[in-house]
Length: 134
Image (cartoon, rainbow, N blue to C red; front, side, top):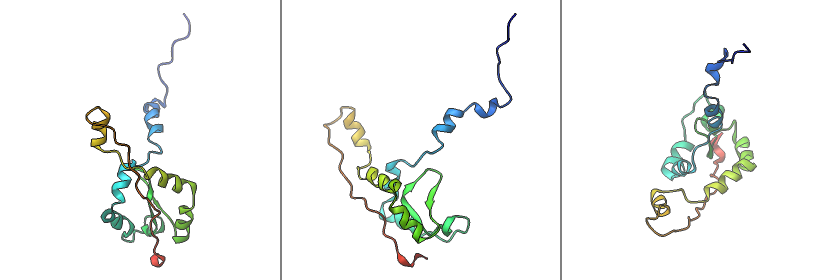
């Protein structure tokens, strides 16, 4: 007869979407979404948040550029935020944000509905930190 093929195991319900789990585990916000957050009107709302005791640092020390989809980068104090500005992760993100965000007009030009215009560079600098944030 031979050995029968194993159809499933007890943990099969947890392994069904393993590929999706790994693909979305460390998903970050898209660069165009971060550019939308960097607009001065939106940036003021994010940087001047109300005190929230459930969030690290009471939601007062926030990195505007280093955001993931479901996790914002809050820091314990001003010193930790300043140290983060010196890290490779933050500098890499600033370098990515220097390119202009992808638009619908650029997508249409890529599809042959216009002539190619190279993307412009945007001046992105580390956010200003107020010393009286403590």
